[in-house]
Amino acid sequence: MQGKIALEEHFAVPDTLNDSAGFLPADCWTELSARLLDIHEKRLHLMDRHGIEMMLLSLNAPAVQAIPDPARANEIARRANDFLAEQVGKRPSRFQALAALPMQDPDLAIDELERCVTKLGFKGALVNGFSQVREANTAVYLDLPQYLPFWAAVERLGVPFYLHPRNPLPSMAQIYEGHPWLLGPTWAFGQETAVHALRLMCSGLFDKHPRIQIILGHMGEGIPYSLWRIDNRNAWTKAPPRYPAKKRIAEYFSQNFYITTSGNFRTQTLIDAILEIGVDRILFSTDWPFENIDHAADWFDAASISENDRLRIGRENAIRLFSLKLG
Ligand code: MN
Image 1 (cartoon, rainbow, N blue to C red):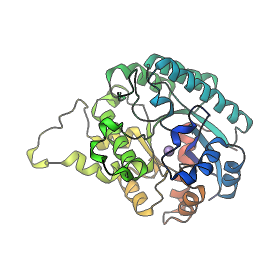
Image 2 (cartoon, rainbow, N blue to C red; image 1 turned 90 degrees about the vertical axis):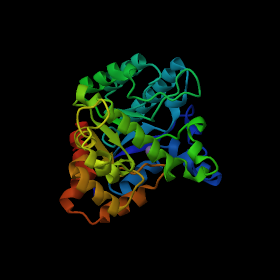
Image 3 (cartoon, rainbow, N blue to C red; image 1 turned 120 degrees about the horizontal axis):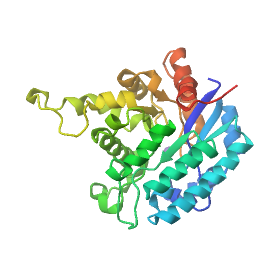
């Protein structure tokens, strides 16, 4: 399929590059670091070759979220966003931007989101899970009350918010001890991000701000597959859910969430997601440079779905969600 739009696509700046070391075998680092620092060469060539018209670019992980000092987090976020704006400016028909945000300080995060959207023309934000705030051994999640003004700003600006994975801190990862292969994309990324998303849904955030749209990668981090069970456990007790939110989780998931195909190129999984939330809330993405563009595109272009659905997932949903102006 030509004209695809991909939106979980990462780059790095020198300040954040090393955050991506260690996820892949050491002998891949030369290739991975070159991929992260490149925008207009190999990346563009692969986009052309595999029918990707546009990428929405975002900073690597955990990057800004792992800088406990709020002022320093803000400085790095601004530096990365300014760099990204400059790159997008060189080829706006091929690249658009999602902002990195210093969530360590909700007021700074609001200011930076507003600057990126209104002054730099960014299409939304991408945040790498919880933030370490002031102390390295802290994990502050986005459902906490100090973030309500931030979420009000997200709703007011009308831009999507991509909740991207990071690993749990060692102090929170006892279950993975002795099993390092389960960290990262194998399992821990999905578990961490799914629980974070469920916290947002249970907290009542979307009752207060019903127009917020959250994007999850990796075909929804496992949530579509578990959606029915989340709402129907022990149904014989007829007990109402014990959380502050007013509705069932499936309602928030189908009204306030989108998912992407990033790093999860599996037709069986895509079809389950279509059956749970419908094609209008699914978007093509690759997760470059951690996954290969050809792996994503070759799978998606041949996946056993209707051509109408391919067009919506591959292109039209993204144009609508981000109000993209394309030729
Ligand atoms: Mn990613």
